[in-house]
Image 1 (cartoon, chains in turn purple, orange):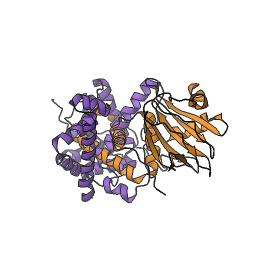
Image 2 (cartoon, one colour; image 1 turned 120 degrees about the vertical axis):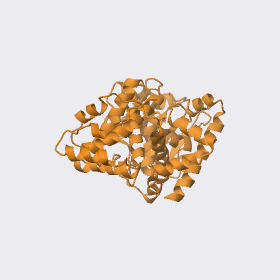
Image 3 (cartoon, helix red, strand yellow; image 1 turned 45 degrees about the vertical axis):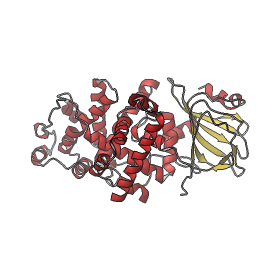
Image 4 (cartoon, helix red, strand yellow; image 1 turned 90 degrees about the vertical axis):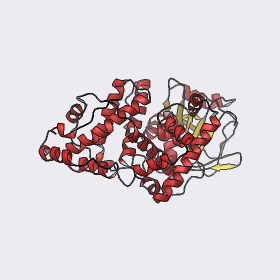
Length: 212
Length: 215
């Protein structure tokens, strides 16, 4: 697919701080996936930094749209959901806690919840709850173990999975079908899909738990 | 806080993480997650996988004015939320807002010592979730289920086939299971339940479904 290469320097943020922000965004090296994005989210929370937002938008909006398309959303809706997700990133920047989740994980949960929300709205014709209303207790030591995982580590762990396990993990995240449908699509018994998923998650837990 | 001892299956936790759990079931799962650090960690692991997979995706082309539109829509970021998202009456484990709202607005008595509060209903599939409050020592009539039923104990405890289910405990039952839970003698038990369909009940229908079908 031919994606637009996003250039944050093209966009002159409107606002008091714009010139510096714009210049800095252009010259700054592409943020390393976890650290840099976390700092950009913090810059939004602390200063309402529109330049930081533009960079996050450039990275995440096209991927969220891609995620929505994979899950069967019409292109217009996928675009809208990508917009909404990034607007939520702006609004809720202050509630992002880098000790609890990698930026990509946080954005993923926002996108996932918005999608569910839209489906509910369609069905019930009612405004849905705030998608931020997710399980969120004080982090415990147990939580922290997994939460500290950087995205890079998770990706490496995914690469370390046997191919057939990685395949069912990918398929299940880019589908909202029950596992029985995934099994049918792969022409596999349901039990096989379930056991591959269990093995995969167990392996990921082992790999990532040790790295924490 | 004491941790629950009965947990959702790994598939259910993964379904929640990937956004494929029916909304009523999600509410029940979230009640459990609020009480269970181990399952929260498992869901976070699943979400981290989702995040990593999101980053790997081939970017889709956004509209040319997408960022301009977004920049025009943003104002000030909201302040950090101060209170926890989940809460409940003092003696419950914490629950999602929807559940508490249902309790406050839709609680009705179904039988002596038994109340029901419908929480959600999926018009397409007929799936429902509801709160069920049962007084001390009361036994629910023997019944089985059509499809899957998920339950989380919010307060008190019930006994089923010799096992005690206490606060935060989660159970999934399917049609193969016929059960007759009984609330323990020490106090009322409140459960959040998500059922796929109308319960396949023998004497259960008149007992509990009547107030539910009126919603």
